[in-house]
Amino acid sequence: MADTLSVRLDKWLWAVRVFKTRALACAACRQGHVTISGQPAKPSREVHANEIVVVRKDNLTRQFKVLQLLDHRVGAPKARDYAEDQTAPSELEKARQPDFRPFLFRPKGSGRPTKKERRDIDRHSG
Image 1 (cartoon, rainbow, N blue to C red):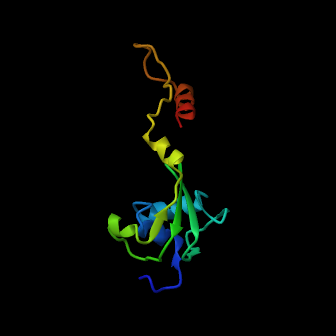
Image 2: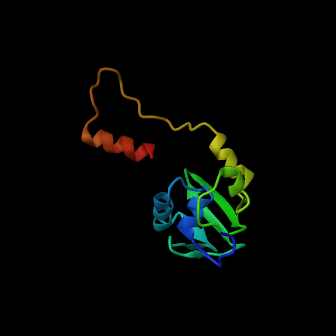
């Protein structure tokens, strides 16, 4: 549907396979993880050709240029005709790096963590 003038942002993100479901695209927009022209974008915002959409997902900041509009999901090879991935190579390299977060050491036999310890573990791991 490349002949329309605009498409909802959440629908376009889903259609070009940035997000697996429209609900995830919608949630990312509501949480401020999607911006257009430096401004947080609502899911219902209309997307137009040649706009730059910046998406923060999985600790990566990806940048897409809207080449054409699309309102239905297509296969991955065909999706490249509608969105140009302009993400910096250094940003893509982050995804390839192993995640070396130090995990909390608990001596064997110390039992289950207490509620306070569990909160500390969650706070440091995420």
